[in-house]
Amino acid sequence: MNIYVGNLPYSLSQDELRTLFAQFGAVDDAAIIVDRQSGRSKGFGFVQMPDDTSAQQAIDSLHESEVKGRKLTVSIARPKKPKSPRAA
Image (cartoon, rainbow, N blue to C red; front, side):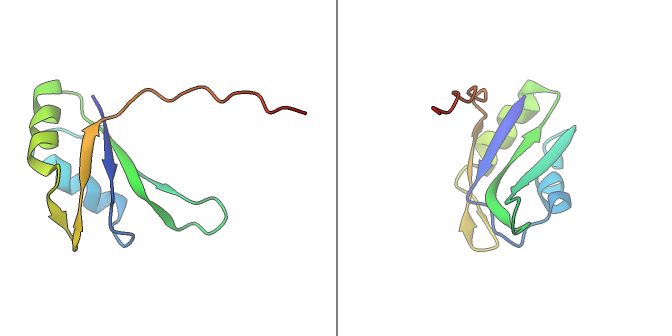
């Protein structure tokens, strides 16, 4: 299951994000989205967990929990929308 994690502290590392979710089960991938120009975290990321039961338990437990002074938003990730072509 692909999980969206929002309102991440800007100082949180991908390893810390992985560790946060690993307490609920196996984590295939943990990624924090960064700005291309600055390389700074955009404050959200995604975690991929292979077991849906563990993933749902992580969502239920971590949603609105506080990490480094910020209240997380955790939910099932919605599919990425295709970009519409830009008008010329």
